[in-house]
Image (tube, rainbow, N blue to C red; front, top):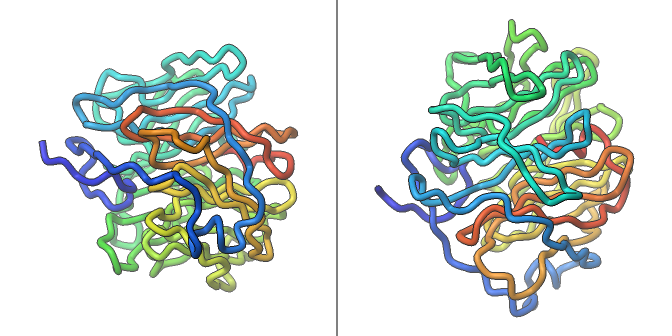
Length: 340
């Protein structure tokens, strides 16, 4: 099995046989010019809740993603690189610090999970096969919701944001090489019948979330370490677009994104077990950090903030396994704070 550096799934073309390893990031404190020393705001300390997964022998890694709360208040997470027969979707009881298997199959590489406001089903993005799969809330009744080409090109779907009517907006990374900008944002109607390209020429888009007023989308572009803002009209078409925030990530790259009730952005960092928090005006407000000296955890991929509360849960992974960490968010959680 060929071993590759520990990096974002958006940079990988084949998921079924991959294995990722990585080098630890030095945690001795911020040097001059690093994000923590360059207007990073205050430090928010995250604390370990539970280890959910170990590195899989078959794939050489574990990578937790897509935390999202279900209707019963239980947290769901996906393990992107889980092999066949191993849980690919888990439900976590954060109070008891336990988890249980919800769903697995023999082919999918699921990079996000979200519940639809339209039909209440769970939706998973299968990065490897260019599909969106839906499940009943208990993990039963799997269905292929969307598959095939969009404007002549197959997707590599990464994250999902739902609008208020239940239409899906999907970040399509398209297996890009560094410097390539063929990524897209794709809108899929809530019945799965029609898919259109909202924006193209994006640099490996990963995180995607509506702003607090559903007026536009925040999209993180992994290979350029930037967050773009796409303003939308009432029909879901883009009316304008600009680079909103440039993320000083160092060796880390912009992964998934979430937005709280005040419009603050929580930008996960792949390659560093931390999150950068920005105001909607682009000001760096805080950096979420796990305890200094923690070894074997190299990426914070995503976060879910408790709906109506400020308790946040962050997925963190590396050679030490896949963990759930918690911290206090700057404002309350909403649907746009709920993973994806």
